[in-house]
Amino acid sequence: MTVKNRVKELWKLCFNDSEEFIELYFGLRYTNKINVSIQSGDNMIAALQMIPYPMTFCGTEISTSYISGACTHPEYRGKGVMRELLSQSFAQMTRKGVYVSTLIPAEPWLFDYYAKAGYVPVFHYSEKEVGIKEVNIPDSITIKHACSPDEASYAYFDQKMHERSCCIQHEQDDYNVILEDLKLAGGTVFTAWENNNIIGMAFVIPESKTLKVKEILCNNTDLENILIQQAAIHYNSDKIVVVHPADAEGKPKGMARIIYAKAVLQLFAATHPDKELNIELTDDQLSLNNGYYYLVNGKCMTTRKRIPGSHLQLTIGELTKLLFSYTEPYMSLMLE
Image (cartoon, rainbow, N blue to C red):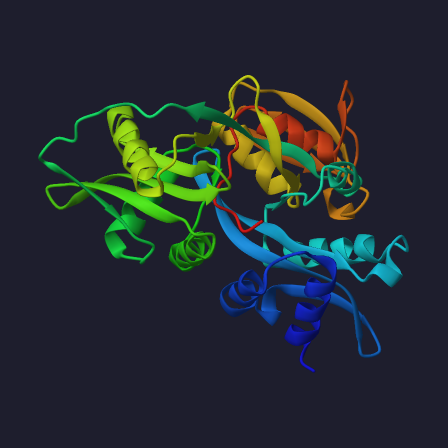
C-alpha cells in the first residue's frame, strides 16, 4: 500500500468526513511532498499535511504553511507522537523558508493543545444574520451563479482578497479546490457583472434551514444586498448568515505560530519604524529563534548575547500574538 493510501486510511479512521470530501482532498489537495508522517512497520500511526499558502503581512506577501489533517491512530494517542510530528514539520518549514505556520483546530479543546507548540489564536471571525432586502437590480447588472473556474472571477477574487492587509491568500489551483468543495456541499458562487466586468461575488452554502455566506467580496453594500437577495431566492431561504472579519464580538477561528522570527521581526520593524523593542525570545521547539532582538529605526538586529538594558521576555507564542495584534488577521474558505 502506498503512503498516500495509508494516510487516507488513517484519515478515515480519525475523521468523520464523507467519502466524497475525502476523495476530493486526496485527489486535488494531498501530495506526498506536503505530507509528514510517522510509521511503525507498515502501520501509519500519525500524519499531517503542510499546505503552502501566501499571506499578506506588513505590506508584502510571505510564505505560510497550513497544518491540515493532523491525526494520530487511536492506539498511539497520548504518547507524544503528534508533538514529534509537529517538531519534524517545524524543521521542514525552516528549511523551506516558511515564515509562519497556521491551522484551524478541529475541536475547541485543541486550542490548548496547539498552544503548547507555540500557536496562538489570531484569526477571528464574526457571523451576522441578515434580512432579505427588497432591492432592484439595475439593468446594467447581471447576476450569475456557477462553481466553474474562470480567469475573470479568480482575478477579481484575488484582487479583493489582497486588499486585506493581513490575510491568507488563495492561488489559482487552490481557488479551484475551493469551488469543488463548495459544489460538494451543495453551494455555489454568485457573481455580479457589469459591462463584462465582475464587480461582486458571494460564496454560499446551504446548512439545514440556513443559507451561509462564507465569503462576500463586493464594490459596495448595494451589491452585497443584491447578491444576498439572489442567493436567498435561488435556495428559497429566509434565514441568511454572513461570515465576515471579526467585530468586537469576534470568535477565534485559526491559530498562527511564527517559524522564522528574525525575518518576521524585520518586516514588522520596517513597517513600524517608530517601535523600539528589546526582546528576549524563547522558543522551546525551534532553538534557532532563541536569542535577543533589538528593533530600532525600522531595523531588527539579533544577537545571542544580551545587550545591557531592560528586555521584554517573550515566548514564541507571545511574540506571535504581539505582532499580529498590530493588524487584522483573517482567513476564509479554508479546507477544514
